[in-house]
Image (cartoon, rainbow, N blue to C red; front, top):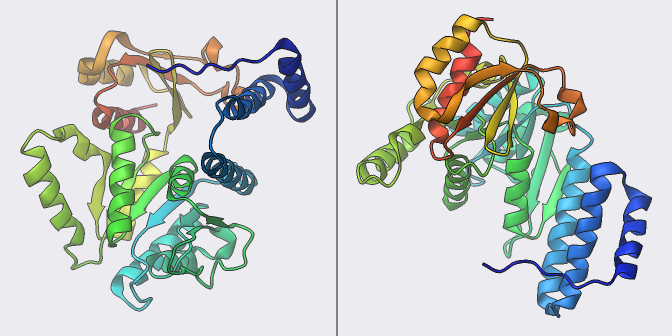
Length: 344
């Protein structure tokens, strides 16, 4: 394993700390200091000009996105993926428009790739004031749709990997409509990240028109060619639903956040923040149903852990704490559903 080694004298480290202290405080200052040291390390490594350009542009894109999204920290967001080639008068686009409008009514903001087709339809439904566009610079120009074009929440990316990171980092749910290679790529990436625990578990909804079979055909491939050969686990199917109904999709997202708020890992412990304490009886039932997930101990209900002092805004929320194996995130999705359904 290659370890990061940065050779830096004490004077240089002191100068870096002084720079960091000018723009940040506390833990943020420490991380800014670490970022500066990493950048200096590229110089020590004699990184090529091509690499330096790539790293610089990627970091600038991420900073721009963080600044744009940082203005809306308290609004939940849903990312909508789908084809740019479908006309607005198709059933799929009409469904995307109606669904995005419904989510905006529930105070969600909508994130799309900023192009036409499903993306433009979703932003038409949500309205520019409730929309983000994450457009990508391509060899064949993909112009922004007329809803988000010129809006300060439209971000232009050079790289797919930074754009994908922002899609995943800043969303509370995903809705995927029929699309081409790009939609397939985005859908499989989201599933892979959740299946492996590399991103937060959130609702994933595969949407199609009432008489459509796009995602049912996809699911048959998943079951017949992946699940049957043991290439995925049956519990992985818990990570998503397929629907043709806006009411079903909306209810799925609303239910997911009915008591669950978020979670984090504190060493080996999964700390689930909830809005209201669940009853002792409900906790005992959850322990019976999900004991197989644990590698030690039991599922407990408690207050914020000492290690969570870096999120003071969440200190008053109750916690569900457990030590699970980190191999079955599909079952952890079911655990969240059980917490949401539990008696208070």
